[in-house]
Image (cartoon, rainbow, N blue to C red; front, side, top):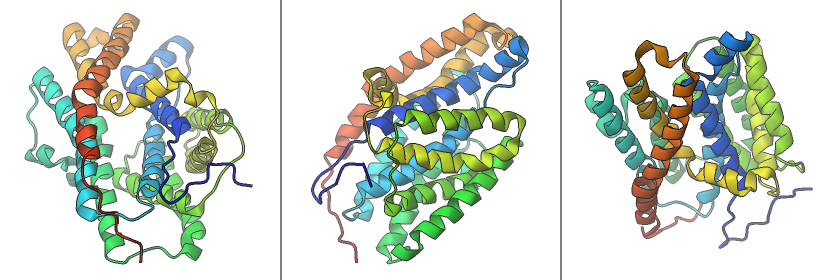
Length: 325
């Protein structure tokens, strides 16, 4: 029996556990770039985790949550503007900080968050996912308005196919390939289909999350294990719908609140520390601690000064939902 809350037509449910999950995944990406794996390799002879796979869980979460938010219909213009206001302000702020630190030349495509369309990374390289998180949902909303929709009877078979495809590209990522567009497309699609499939898992989120971390560790040695990650990730989301786990605790909620800004803020801080310490930064444990503390501080500042005001503006937009045909 489904355990998640019943959502009435005019009622909204906040998935607090999924916020906590998103926060931990963002922290995993930060640890990856700060040098967690290089540290464990030097000190323990252990290669660490494929934390880059956390980004694929982000896509699944986004597809799920965006479909939930649009369940009563969507006004295309309003959706596009709200999506832009959700992602762009922090993207631009973190990019400007990074340019000031590195004095790196940038492509004009940074202005429209479209550098990944050329096959290159943006200046703030984790933001490759932000490009796809902005444009693919808008394209999906356009298709929805045009009447292109997946029939209900095809949802579950296509969900399995999308997860298999995502797992295949995740395995490639674990072997050193990027596969950015494919991972974004199948991750967002699978998240959308997961919501429509109405799958719930009557267990606490801690259990599938432990399996998710285990797979990230095993994939470092056996990349084929990454094939299973999308399936375990949807179990995490299905379990997270129920609530009541440690992921809903106050520390996890704070981490979830900072997740997006932390995801984009840590590279500017990392570059500042590397510029100050030179090549010795990666082998300096104290420098890693400084990067972590500085990343949280900058993330908090961006959340207060940039992200929350933009979200307030977004919330003030007049909604004009379009009934599903």
